[in-house]
Length: 168
Image 1 (cartoon, rainbow, N blue to C red):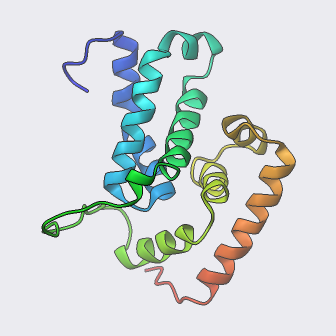
Image 2 (cartoon, rainbow, N blue to C red; image 1 turned 90 degrees about the vertical axis):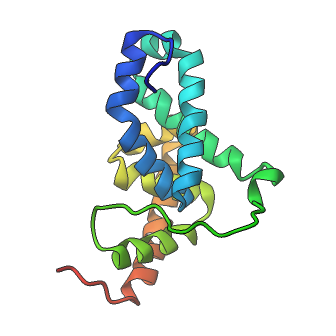
């Protein structure tokens, strides 16, 4: 975001949190390019409402909610579901952390969850939010978070339990 005209604290926040937000968005979308779009949408909303988010006392909570909302609304836009191209990209973005096979297995397992259930699992277990914080981000009840997290984890255990994962 260099060269952006905005409050210095906004620019510092983006510099400090962009990578973590992008990883969360990747777990939601399963695609690095879509994750970048989701984060850009969320940061644009955060920029517009920066002072309000600061006054509320939790910029992280506001931004996480914006990321999840951008992800959920992206799936509702028909023009976002299909992408035409004349050629395939030469190579996919490479994430330097962990085994690519393990990441691919987890990404595919997460993709089998519904969007809101995936958001709950990612916020609870990747972003390490409490049940209450997750419910606040998603604007839902704690009971819904608990039940959807439980169902989502059960599904992931079923899928991942059937796959032998290398932990070297």
